[in-house]
Each structure stands twice: as C-alpha cells, then as structure tokens.
Length: 413
View (tube, rainbow, N blue to C red):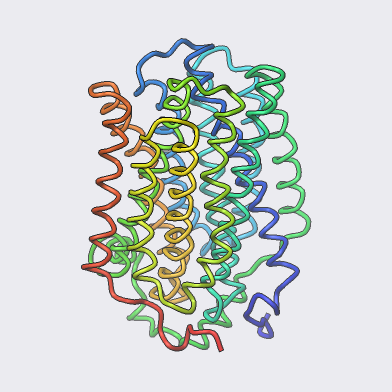
C-alpha cells in the first residue's frame, strides 16, 4: 500500500486496537505478580530464594531470546503472523498454572509465557512504531507501555483479591483464559499488517544503498556494543529489568516477611506497575519535547531511590518506594524504545528493537539470579541495596556515554 500515512491520528483505529491488545498481553504477566512467590513457598515448599525466583529466570531467558527472533521474524514474515503465533503459544499457560502438580510444571508454563510475551509484546511495540512515524514516537511508546503495565497492575490486584477470597489456585488464573481468548481473537481478525508503513517511512529517510544495509550480525553488535547510543540504551534496558526481576520475585517475599496479608501484598504489587503504567502517558510524550538522554538517566536514579525506600519498614514506606520505582521506570521505559527508533533506520529498526529487547529481558533472569543468591547469602535487604546501587550506576553510564538522540525532525510541530 503506497498510500500508507504515518501518525497516531491518521491510524487511530488500528493504533487503539493495538493498545487494547497489549493490555491483554500485560494482563498475562500480572497473573503472576502477586501469586507465584507465595505459591512457591506454601504449596511447593521452596525455601531458598534462588529456587523461588527460578520461574523469573526461565521467563526472562525465554522472553529475551524470543524478543530477538521476533524482531527478525517481523521483518521476514510480517508483524501480524508473529502476533497471532504469540497468542497461540500463550493458550496453555493459565491451565498449566491452575493445575500444576509440581514446580517443574510452573517453570514450563513460564517458558511458554516468556515465548508468548516475546512474540506479542515485541510485535505490538514494532507495529506502533511503524504506525506512529517519527513525529510522536515517544507518545506512541508511552501509550503502548501504559496499556501493558496498567494491565499488569490491574491483573496483580485482581489476582490478589481472588486469592484472598478463594485461595491461591485455581480461581485467580481464570482471568488468564479471558486474556488469551480476547487477545487471540482481536489479533487474528481485527489487527492489520503494518509493514507497508515501514516502506512509507523509509522513503522519508531515503532508501539505504544495498551495500550500506547492515547485516543481522552488524545490527546485533551495533545495538549491543559499538554504537554508543544504542548500546547505552541496551544496558539501561537490561538494568531496568534487572531491578524489575528483583521486585517481581523479592518484593512479595519481603512484604510477607513484614506480616502483610495477601490482600496487602496484592495492593503493593499493583502500586508499582500502576504508577509505571499511568506515568508513561506523560513521560513518553515528554521525551518527544525535552529529549531522551536525561529522562533516561534521571529515571534510573529515581528507580534506585525507590528501591531504597522499599527497604524502609511499614506499609507506607513500601507503598512510597513502589510508587517511586514506578515513576522512575516510566521515565525510562518508553524513552529507551523511542531512542532506538531515533537511531535505527526503518529498514533494520525491527531487528535493532529485537536485539535491545533481548538484552533488556535478560535483565529479568540476571536480576532474579543475582537477587536470589544475594538474599540467600546475606538477606533480603542486602539484595535490594545491591540492585539499587547497580541501577544508580546504569544512570551514570547513560549520562556519560549516551548522546541526545532526539533530532529536530522528531520534534512535535
């Protein structure tokens, strides 16, 4: 389609539909935010923190590897096929979590969830970048991540409420059946392919000469190490999800050790992604006006402060820290994706997003392993202090190494 137009307003129907689909994607992750750490301790009797957090390691590794493949596959076979495939992979997950007779079944469910999330979330990101064009890229990513993480919060809150009333299984996981059915039906029958929008944007940038188009290997190393802007973004994403993996696994255990009820744990588990999700409505658009670099660096520092606050005792301290962590993550998350879109040419942008998301979601596994081992050796507060220090250091790397990626052509008119 040579008449494809770029912009959120010009593609409002499809863009809004993809926002809704990503809410169902986020809801699948939210199923586990409140339930799985207590489930590991109470039903499967796992004592070691590293064993409890093993589900996050499995999720993080499979999602990270699938992110990379999703970017490549989106360029090869189209975005919609990848999106539908991701929902098909997710279909068994809620049933496995409902009826798992052993922890190994939970780990298998999280492997499937990781593959599904890598395919579905990556593709909704790529498709929104395709539709929005360069003018409102930060806003587009803010809306995408708002939908996903606000749904994570709502799902975490709902599962905590259901668990408090009906028990840890199976009722809280009924929501997952609804999410999968809705996401699959919308993706298969309502979402349209967006690759023709990439061709339209490539004309604005100018087509790359055949000899100048980077190979997949070159895209990998540019995004990972050699390009100072792309690699700064990649390490920022990795550390962001490193602290998210710690929060996902250790916060419920930390709150439980402080004698919080399941309902209180569900509320606290929801504050972080709810603040994260809602704040991205502001921060994504803000990055289109003020730039990417300092919003990312400052966001990492706010995250570090939030983790430090959580170590404070009492419901108020927990809630304040979770909210700060959410605000800091909102400053970072859509802005990192927008920066990738600023730097990467449309012809290889999806592949670069895939590499970034590979490193970013490996942070889940690294964070869970590091936090679990540290908590087993030195206690939960020590693990949280360590992750806070790493997060602060990541902001310093962005401040020193990364250049501003927002160009005058990306500024809103």
